View 1 (tube, helix red, strand yellow):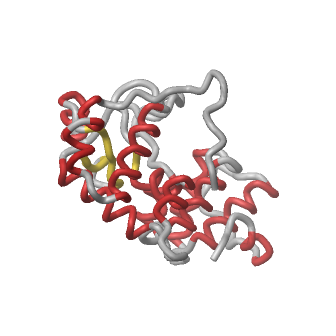
View 2 (cartoon, rainbow, N blue to C red):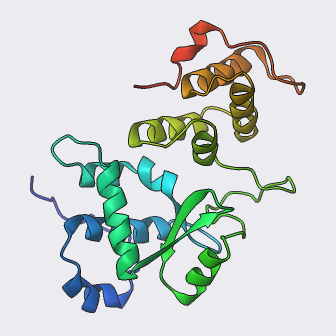
Length: 220
């Protein structure tokens, strides 16, 4: 497939000069180069400080998934390998948000310091700051804490669910699933679907989700 060329008024993304000098001489792994460039682009879409991307965001990124897919295999392990190489090289730095989800940022002094402190400043997504005293955990962290490890397919499903339901519902839905010992996204999605259809009360956990609600926002 031949690239048709850049359109008029195409946007440009700033890239640190060393990437086109000593680093491009050293990077021989194509997956590492792709992941590094994509992280730089994603960081450029952020606003505020600190600027970082989460592990869940990278797993849900369709461009990375397509660019790192190898003979139809899941791109997750290849992404993990590429990110590990970029961190070992020193192009990216990684840390954890309150000991939970991994974060990635450029290896600059300012971002290195922010990541080292756990990136407690408001997330650089352009969204309004959380109004509660304790910042809400995002849906990817909630999934890993309540159900298990993410994979690219479920990450994409979670990303779609974020667009369909109010953000405050997710923590309550995951909590209800855990309290009922039903640790699956299928169950959580059914809770969200029921609240959307019947309304969500401010009380404790409601009744068990109906079987009919299990299919929305769920893929396997």
